[in-house]
Image 1 (cartoon, helix red, strand yellow):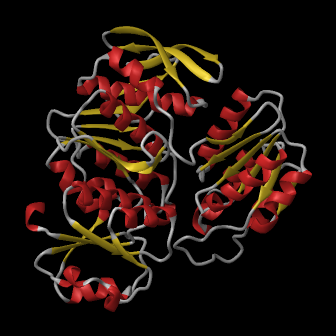
Image 2 (tube, one colour):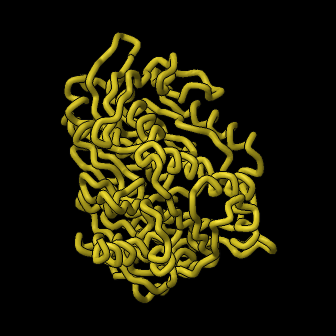
Image 3 (cartoon, helix red, strand yellow):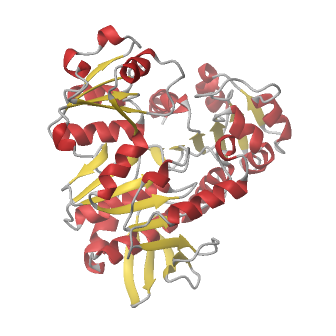
Length: 450
C-alpha cells in the first residue's frame, strides 16, 4: 500500500494501546487523524492534545467531514469492536479502504527493516527495551509499543522511518501479517484458547510466524522452546546468556555471553528474572542489528520500564506499592518471584482482577496455584472485556480453589480499606482490566499514610 495517496486516517477503537501508537505514527507523518472510542481515557486525551479528532458515540453524524471521503481516507479498526458497529458498517457499505490494525503493521514492516517480538509473555517489555536501545544508539527507528514507556511517556518511539520495532501479537493470529528481518519468540505458554482451541494450535501458529521472516533474516528463541534459532537465556548454555548475576541496590549487574565473546558490566534497573530475560533478548537483537556493546551498556542502564509492568508507585523503607499488568498464571508467578527476590521475608498482599471469563475458565487451576503463593489475597470480580459471562465461571469459583486461608472477595470501592486493615509491607495490584484505574487512588491514600 502507498500511504502517500492517503490524506486522512480514521481509527475505530483509537484509544486501544496498539491502535493509538499507529495513530501517533500517522500524525507524525503529516496525516489528518481522527477516530472513535467507547470512553475517554488518558490515551484519548493525549491523542486529542496532538490534534486527533475523537468522539465517543458510535454515530456516523459525528465523524468529521474529511474522513467521509472514501478516495482519500484509510479506515483502521481493532478486532475488539462489537459486531454491527454502525460506523464500521457505514465505511464497509460505502467501499472505504478498511484494514485491521495488524494489516497496517504488516504494510509498514514490509517497507522497513523490522525487528519483531513475539511470545505469550514479555512482548511489551522486550519491545520497549529494544526500541529504547536502538533509539539510544541513534538508529533511525520507529517503535510501536503495547504499553506506555516510562522513558518517553508514549507508546511510540520515533527517531526515523528506516527501522521498525513491533510487537508480534498472537491474539487473533495478527502476527502472521508481519514480515520481520529479525524476530524473537519469548514464550509459547497456552493462552487465547478461545481463539486457538488448543495449546497445540497456538504452538503451530508460532511456528507459522517463524516462517514469516524475510529471506536472510534471523529467529531468536528462548532456550528450551521447540523451535530452531539463535537461543538466549539466563545462566545456561544459550548463544546469548546473562551470566555472573548479582543484585546491587535493587539493580541487576551481569555479564553478557555472546557467540563472539563475553561482555562485562551491564546494569539493568528492573526487578525480576523474567525482565532480565527480556533485557537479554533485546540486547541480542540490537547487537545483531549492529549496535556496539559499549553503546548498549549505556542505553540499558538508562531504561526506566513500561507503565503497569512492575511499576513502583510507592517505595519506602516501611511500605512498597507495585502495580503490574500480569493477567496469565505464568506472569503472576514471575511477579511473585520478583517480589520475593527483592523483598525477602516481607509480607506481600496481592489485589488481583481476573481478565476474561474464558481465560479464567481455561486456567482456573493454574491461577489458583499462582495466587496461593502470596501471603494475603484480595480478589475482584472478573473483568469481562469483550466477553459475555460463562455460567459457573466466577471469582468465587477461583477463590474456593486458592489454597490460602488469608483470602477475600472484595469490591473495587473497598480495596483501600482492606489494604489499610492489613499489615502487609508490600502491596501489589495485578491484572489487565480496569484495576489500573484504582492505582492512583491507592497511591494517594497511602502517600498520606507514609
